[in-house]
Amino acid sequence: MMQPNSPEQSDGPGKPAKIDWQAALAKHDRWLRTIVYARVGEPQAVDDVMQELSLAAVRQKAPLADANKVAPWLYRLAVTQSLLYRRKQGRRRKLTDSYAEATRPTEASREDDPLEWLLADERRQLIRTAMSRIPNRDAEILLLKYTEDWSYQEIAERLGVSQSAVQARLHRARQRLRSELASLEVIDSET
Image (cartoon, rainbow, N blue to C red):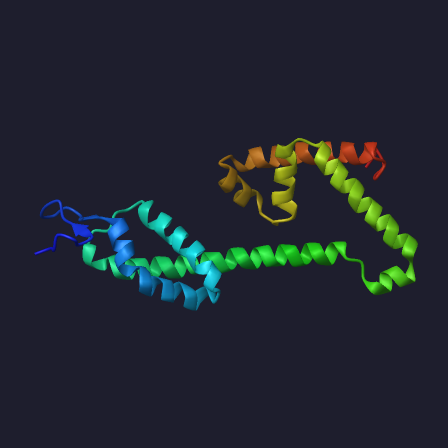
């Protein structure tokens, strides 16, 4: 027989148990935090991952059929959320590093040709200006394609549109960017 404070409550024979996720998460919180900490290795990240874990538990699409399997299910969810967190942090670190590398001129390039360095810096600034002049929607899709290196399919899935819509939007966004770059005389208007 189930105890009154148990996180699992059955609706009757043959029906999946309704799980009080708040109670279940509170019951398993301590060891789940240990699992998350072991996976991410950053004490400050544990709360973020636990929040994502809680949201995923509450938003689950298919209810658990066996309430006795809450702990193993939460374990798998903790591992998954930890991996997703690490992947997100890795992408953020990679993007930050690549941006820093792209915007930081090497000592050799400054010493070899200061004029070349100044021109490259001016060109980057003009590209930023052109990006700020095009509609936000166009800038977003260009950044998703070229900074995140997403495929048409990935963009379509995230934006909830078809691949052909993504292709059309990218085509228009590139045209608008080319037009702005030409008006700023970064490229020839014929390009």
